[in-house]
Image 1 (cartoon, rainbow over the protein chains, first blue to last red):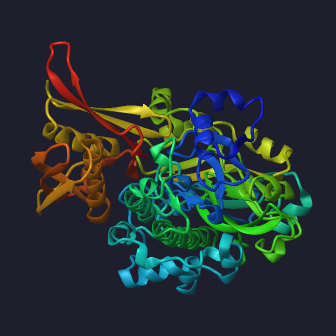
Image 2: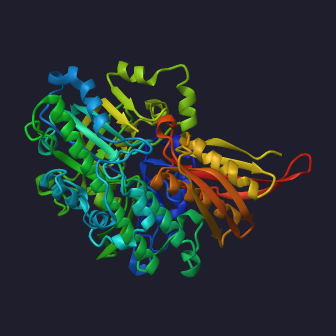
Image 3: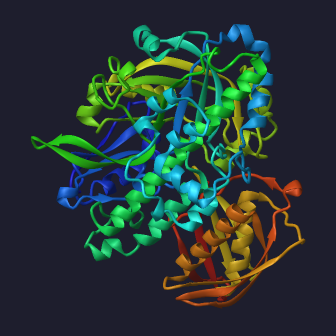
Length: 460
Length: 145
């Protein structure tokens, strides 16, 4: 190991962490060339490909530091966005079912579903290089959405030319689609406020509705990762990199292979932001149609959009000098503290919003990044709960039960397109995210702002 | 032994195990296994596209993985399924043949899961021997769902 491993956890979480091989994966990542400080894992750590989910690793190109597609994942820029509103739940609770139906009708979700926009290659290249600002210009949202998206919804130096035709073919019809599996769109209530000042700054008021969208780069991103894994197959041998796990396949950041992956990954990340932006627009239209008011008057503003599968070049002080490191966040969210120049000006006094979704029966959380994140975790925080049961075990556990009815009893209106969507994604299939956010709050990485309770969900 | 496949659980994803007496005979049940992971898929016979395929330069496990990744691509980009596959060659270094692709019958297909990718995790094709001393091949692949 080149550095030590450091896992953020609590006594409650440790038994489940020991259950799978994720700790071993933290140790393996610690062997990557050029890794700085620690191989980190957030409290939602669980087994992944190469890197664990919840893994954070920063490598230094000056030391031959590497970039690894496994440190990002197949779903490049899978992430979450949160839209707030002025809508008081009590005023619309009889319309929630209708609202969820409209969202389900308007937002394509599930296998084989196509988006409302289909991009030809030339226009897709613009999406890949410009991200969500491009689709906002096309009428799919507001300029303020861009200000409240991580990286302004666009990673610079994205290379559309490095995204294969194959990836473009997979993604051309999928921009503005939710996907399936653990992707979702939720209608939520702001149930509890922990930090009144921060909540006010974020525009969150108790009892109001929010919309949370969890989705990523769809088939385009998966193919970019697939292409990179093939391109990098020979890189470890070529650059003399010894890997304890072949799934950590990597190349020096500054090598041709590393730069090819970085350029294509940035393009896929931009596609994901465009994807979530189009769905935001469709969600606004759905609420307008049911509630009979404009999205502006309903106050449907974007709180923030965060990526939780990404690699970014970020400056950190290492051995007394500012150095640009390649920060891999795989199932981990950026969490910049108050005062950081990349935090939107309106939030700079409290820190960057951190969005942590739970399962569809329990809570999601909003936090804000704090100084300890920048000092200890390369500005990173957890991203969600992590699975407790395999899909097969979840389906088995649902035999003889109606998950739809159980959710209804909990006050959640659910619509799912896939035959097994609700069964596989039932609340019991996931760990309790409260235990996860407790750790990041208590260690000062991020500070709790609000708890959100689902009242409606659509899934693929 | 008859070629067969089974899907097995894997925390967040899905495993596919394929058994067959020879390497070429792994291909059809692997195809069926991928589609079974995705759902109960039906195709329309209205139009068919014949496509050759050739994967080379790797070991049988990687070749089989690359083949299934190709099927995933055809499904996502063209909404097509393999209605038949002919394997001409499957050796230590090459997998080749041709496919007949048909459009998915969306009305009569039921989807379970979106397969994002065929991973390299636990990827293997191993030659084994049964209790009756017959040799057979076992392929293991993990699909990212």
